[in-house]
Length: 171
Image (cartoon, rainbow, N blue to C red; front, top):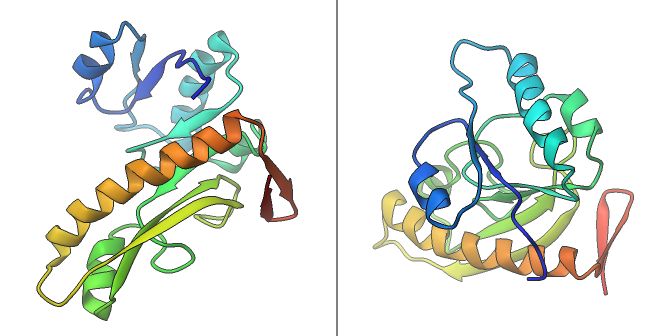
């Protein structure tokens, strides 16, 4: 992908062993008992030491403060586990199951100050049916998420994405 992972920051320790196998620095910054701003400040101190071009959110289920997002305009990439703009926020697969959808998908987008409303970089969907429960949909959705995030990162790192207002133009 023409990229180097400088470090991983986790607010849970679950991924530390995976990250360490690849020799990538892992920084654990708990969010427990902290304000959003205090947690963002601790992350900023670690991030600033690396001077990254982009931040990639994966398995990160906390809303970033507006001040944090403003420091990295169109440089924070999130993978959202639904086909935005439908089913924003938490539990999209439960929402999809309850609505009886026939497709589920994933959306990679730049983060802005509006929850799950940043410029979309890549999307994909798969078909589902009535025999699949919310848990089955979530498993299938995780596979789509991986593919969509990889597609988005490849485009961004190759400098093929141009942001215009709240839309992207892909070259």
